[in-house]
Amino acid sequence: MLTEKKSRVQKSLELWKHAEDIIMDGTQLYSKMASVGVKGVSPVYFVKADGVYAWDYEGNRYIDYTMGLGPCFVGYNNPKVKKAIQDQLEIGTIFSLPNPLEIKAAETLIDIIPCAEMVRFMKSGSEATQAAVRIARAYTGRELIIKGHYHGWHEWCLADTTKNGGIPKAYKDTVFEVKYNDIDTVKTLFEQHKNKIACVIIEPMETELPKDNYLQKLRELTIQNGALLIYDEVVTGFRFALGGAQEYFGVIPDLAVFGKAMGGGLPLSAVVGKKEIMQKAKEKIFVSSTFGGEMLSLAAFLAVVDILKTEPVHERIFSIGNKLRDGFNALAKKHGSKIECIGLGPRLDFNYRNLKGQTDLHVKTLFMQEVVKRGIYFVWNMLPSYQLSDKDIDYTLKVFDEALRITTEAERKGNVSKLLEGEPPIKVI
Ligand SMILES: Cc1ncc(COP(=O)(O)O)c(C=O)c1O
Image 1: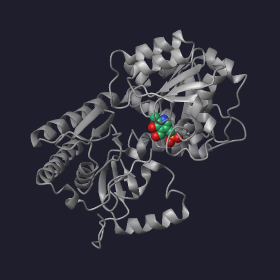
Image 2: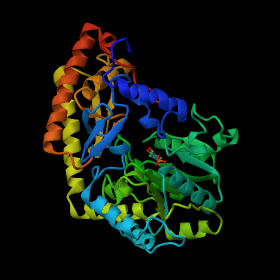
Image 3: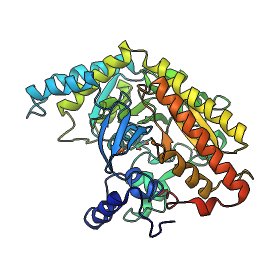
Image 4: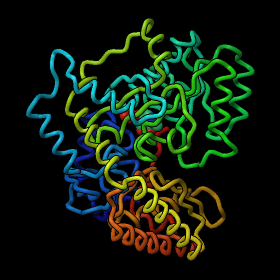
């Protein structure tokens, strides 16, 4: 726990205290709050980043496995992205009329994303999932939606969470959350609410693989019930394949939403889908954004696509990500730890279990503490960049080995809590 002993990130904690005083929540994204790491040990501010490395306020360097929470899949300061932004900056960032760059970017999405026949650009993932659901409701004339866990900060996404302050109660009755792979609940909901469900919006994969043809079954159920299938590819998009997880799994939705990695670090999102649906919905809805056609992000997006097309990005991300996962699990076995690394190479996570196999926050905290002290950074999950070198991966596995040894030894001695130098991470929703 935080004691009189000076924290390794003392200066940052003081800055954070001030930030909490003047910025609501201290920062703009929950996953960047000081409380998501081991407060007192984990870095709080990054002041510089390059490639796959980030430097904290105290000057410590980390291999960053979070990469801006996803946007910087192609690496920080990627030279091709940087050049595209610099060139575009000479031309302009935003005009009073659309620039043809919007058309080029739209054609590019239509070319690479299987379900894309028409597109609409926005800035954040939340905006784009909101637009997708509005399109689905307008197209079907229905109000109810089935959703996964997190799709952004708007009303229908948070209505059923502990953070639903300020959201009219009525929203709660329009949304049903389903767990990934739980096809029976989806089936039951369609039976209970015949002709009332507008869409199923889910992430095509988080860290659990689709079981028993889950995606195909969702596709069939939505068709049978006249509802749309929407993939939230804000995280999976561009990471799993150039055409997203829909290309990777070969099950094509009606609409899909992209964000994060598509702008190479600049704010860009898009809703894409079948033309017939988007054409029909557009007569009834209003979606409009001053910065929607901002050009630095569109130029960065074209550079990202060029990188993904010309470099063996996906081969590499699966190879290094899977090596990390399998390497971690082999080390856990060696030490007798029950912590498990799950997911596919481009998106990994950990199940933090103690030696009895129970979810254990203190075991998680100790493991994260020992990892972060050795210069490896991640929060909820790992969204690695394909630019990680073999040396980075080898070093990371060495750190995992040491952190697993310390954690399991402490578990056996029963002194996990005593070894904690910071506060356990807090998940908000
Ligand atoms: C699956 C998913 N959808 C949507 C969003 C919202 O994106 P943004 O934070 O850009 O609004 C997120 C953000 O983490 C996400 O993980």
